[in-house]
Length: 57
Image (cartoon, rainbow, N blue to C red):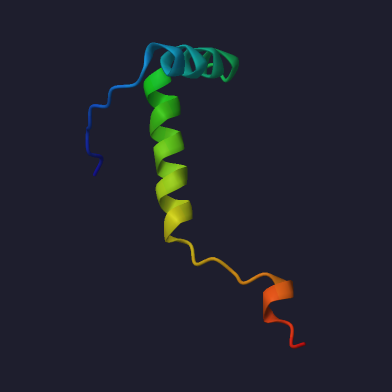
């Protein structure tokens, strides 16, 4: 099931999103939903330690 939400962004941010959405032939709302979904899922993915921090000295 999908949930609806309302957000407010500054005019300059909206213009950036509008241009981006036009380039991808999608609506601003669809682009915003995709960006929020990707960011939320990325946040839930455990981060791997880099090789340099796991090496013994």
